[in-house]
Image 1 (spheres, rainbow, N blue to C red):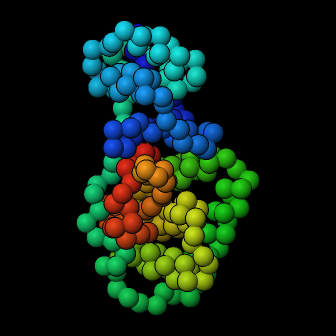
Image 2 (cartoon, rainbow, N blue to C red):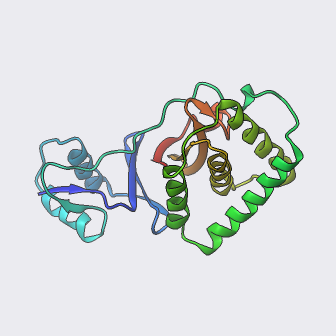
Image 3 (tube, helix red, strand yellow):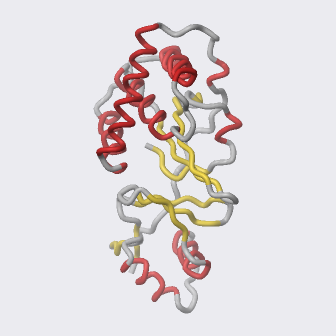
Length: 220
């Protein structure tokens, strides 16, 4: 018997500990040490140990794994390209007034969207928009959006708003013909989650040092 993750789950190896994101339940979680070791052996295709079969069936019963044909097995989140530059590399210019107002409006709509719809549906809307967008813009256009949203940060507190801010920025870029990566990451000791936007190897929404401690757990 082989197993895969259900569509609502993603997982990463954060410094030797498996961390899961369940977008349907909007929660992060980890497994007990013994079950975590079983899951690691499954991902690594390592020789199973006594008790692994029962623990894997327990994960199926909990909805963490699904039975699958063939030799399929779950895998960790594939990280995007490592960013080489961030928004500090953009020209220090005043954004256009209309672009800043559009960014404020997009952020407001996204905050409301996350309150009235599930995280799973909101993220699915971003994925769908990306899939139906033909990339026509260049890096300079991404820079304009980054500057506009940085200006919004001076007007509206960005504290604990990395998720709606990143989703809003992604939506604004997609609407302008730019196809970015929306990245959710985690770190341990203490646990913390973060979200950011990349365009190729350019970190649009953040500083390089801010995302360095985080391991990507979901990339859209």
